[in-house]
Amino acid sequence: MRAVLPDVLTEALARHGDRVAVTDADGSLGYAELADRARAAADRIARHATDGERLRVGLYATNCVEYVVGYLATVYAGAVPFLADSAFGPFELSRIAEDCGLDLLIHAPSADVRDVVDESLTDDGEFGFLTVSRVRRYSTPRPRLLDDTEVCRFTSGSTGRPNCIEFSGAAVSAAAANWVKGTGLSADDRIACFAALSNGLAFNTSLLAAFLPGASLHLSHGLPTASRVVRLLESTAATRLVAFPALYESIVRRSPEEGFATVRTAISSGAPLRDTVREEFTRLTGVPIHNYYGVAETGPLTYAADGRGSGLGAPLPGVDLLAEEHGIRVRSESMGSRYLNAPGVFEQRLDDEGYYRTGDQGQLRDGALHLTGRTSRMVNVGGRKIDPIEIAEVLRTAHGVLDAVAFEAENQHGEPTLAAVVATEPGVTAQSLRTHCAATLPSFKVPGILRLVDRIPANSIGKPSIERLRRLLGEPHSN
Image (cartoon, rainbow, N blue to C red; front, top):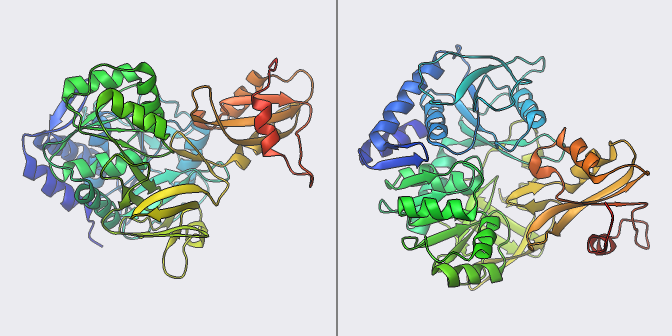
């Protein structure tokens, strides 16, 4: 089957020539330069291919120009890129490598990949400061990719193994094209992106979507603080800001007086954005925040074009969305095909009409989607879905732990965070539990709030009382 993305990228990069394509703090590439760099790097990747098998290449790095080169190079080489969240720790990365049968890993030299790779491969600088390593072989057979799969991305699983979503090239291309059409993205736009390119918020709105009309993509290294946002906006004269709600909260707390003169659109997704934050951000900066609703498995779904209301906007082109009593169901042109490493799980969420059950509840009011809750147990923290049962199970394996319950709560800034109440024996500390969690979980799954108790409060039928657990978080304690 002929791949879709190489032709789409080739046409887009050729059409925009010397326009700026992508920048970071260390440099920039025009469209023609990006194409040349990606082709040279693709030749290096292709040398490791074997007959009859497409290479599986993991990308494990923070946002940078070299990440974009590596992604395009993998596509051009006829290989399949697996976009791993750089927040994943060694434990989850090794599970990905084994579950998905990775061949190569493109990563930062400082990344802890000792349990995953056999050797670093020599190159001539095609990948800049990033390193290309050969992934060690596992005894377990690797699952077969679908013939039309061209990109794989990850979402949190319920067993500690991130679910690997297979996307066809047609789905990836449709996600980008429909985003461009539905949001009015143009060649005049300069996108300041503070979400990881492995995440759907950035992947769908700021990668291929930027290149189709000839916009420029501006990336930032390091922790996205409010001051770093302002510096990037000013230095690039950005017209679009893409970020998670937590960053908008941080900007509002800083109360900036300048830096947003050129910004026309701010885009938020991944977690609920409080109306008070949205309104205060616009008051301070003059920039409306446009909410965007998407699901990892289905791609971008809605966009709030006016940026004024509290809803998540109307369905994007190529999206059929139903908000019903039992939850939101969607079909989209950008939908994933299945989970490579969890046979049958994705298919169980599809109904007989091919609609995907999102697990969200909501209503369509005047054509705009408003979320009202969740039908599943997953919690949303910083744009990442976390299974609280998985967290509780990890906590229960710690020495001295009698029981544990994890759930979503609010931190001191009113932002969603992961909390856990843990019944322990004497001598157990919150720090020891965090260290235990960090040994097997990525940093974003380690509870931000931990309360240690003698026993877990229960309701009248013996189940943990979430209401009483939440009250515990607000009481004084010595841990």
